[in-house]
Length: 200
View 1 (cartoon, rainbow, N blue to C red):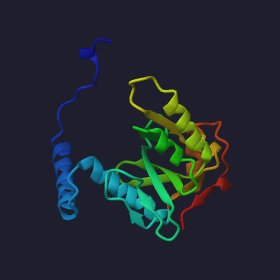
View 2: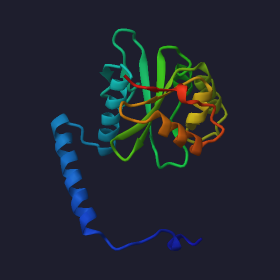
View 3: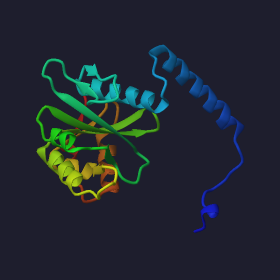
View 4: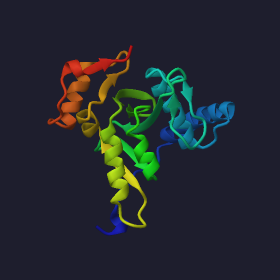
């Protein structure tokens, strides 16, 4: 297909523009209050805080580098990856991974959460856990990447579930509905109703 033939163009919607502007103004007020001015960072920080709170990590990292959250009592860390329910593939993306960072994911102090969202704020479920296999997988991908290419690894939730990660639903969400969604997403997933836990 020719580059200029791509896309679907529709008339501008004044309602979309007005409602969108209102939503962005409210977000801007939030950014001013907490001095977080990069919009992607703001949304990720809010989501990271929600996920960390559900999982019992009470400290949040406010700097760009390092893991996303920490448990003060145990010294355990949390890395949160965000994913949209509307994505073709549910999973996490590791950008700019080096050997040191890849090895950290085999350390028992580091946990990983893939949070799947519907829209900006509706958390559907979390795939959460820790496995040496994740670190080994990332390390292998880092070592075998093409020279000069950016180090980016994608790990699907099916692989994490296979490695023993838990599937958690927020309070008020249906485990039965999630199981149906998961099996529509991938009918070969080895998951049963009793494997899905409600966060409490």
